[in-house]
Length: 451
Image (cartoon, rainbow, N blue to C red; front, side, top):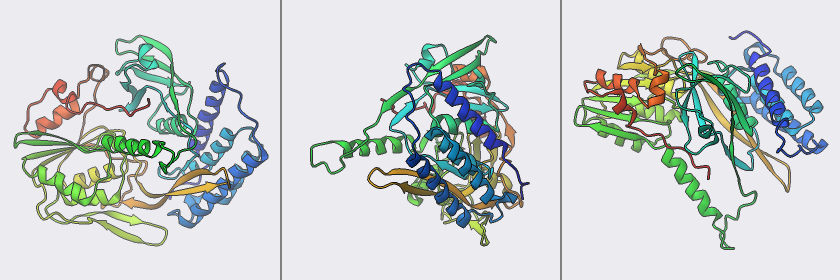
């Protein structure tokens, strides 16, 4: 059991949030925040109470790791009562859930009436944070931000493996910003500070899904869904009968889809499964994939809930699994099911794990959806952990992660030039010659649409 704590993560989330508020206040183009009404305050308290009730019913540890949950919720209520803006009130709700120090328990605030994009992505590589991608035509690109730049600070805070996810949550979900202030160091050593403005696209507040008035809103939704599915698709590269490389963006595939993938893999001597930046997903997909690469049935882990402990085993075992050489790639963006799969392969000595240390965000959770208000309805939600996952070595991966069998990190120069030495090394282990330049061109990154 973790020691009781008034989470330093709570302090960090609130600190990031209120720093963001100060940053927004300095923007002359930003309209003044509307006054926070008593109705909105009561609605925020209702949100907190509703989520708190479900946490008390469903959270996997009824003792909340020694935290006085009722006292923590009351503290958050008191802070909401004193809040002067809706953003501050929502931040206190987020802070209450964050006190559990649980990667899969968090607040999902009401959606914003816009889509925003900062035009760049960054990631922890080892213990340093780097810009990994810059969107063409973005403000960040126009100001000289490039892949391979080391990120020394974001809005004044130094990114670490412990807090980068909090920054991402605050700046993308809880409190989207007009811009990010970045302190950077180029690979050559020069430092600079950049204010990278976000691009915003306003969304329709009311949609006509009937089509009766000739509106195309429903087709816009279909197209948006198709675009999202396209980005989530599994991508495959084949090299004769020697090697197949599977790029898996998340665990969101049916049994038939996994069987089709394994069917292709069986035609090759070696398989590389690239789980870098894969945040996890469905437990069933994890079971299908696990069953597809083992000759004999294996136990994945134990699922420990507040009621009992049950073995987590394969949902199905392939009649013709892939039995060739297996290499699995992970990095700091690999989370949840990605980490579990990699660790099973490692514990069972089924293949080689290559890359960077994974994120250590491994629990089983359920998303809860809520609504508040009549007439004008606000939709919000929460992710609540319902089980811990204990691997067959008796250990949890939460806050621990997976250490690769071979640690290999791309350098700033690799990122700047688009080289992928990790995938090239994996191909070498599989018996296929491939340069880092060739590996870097195999799966071109596809930016989500913001136009």
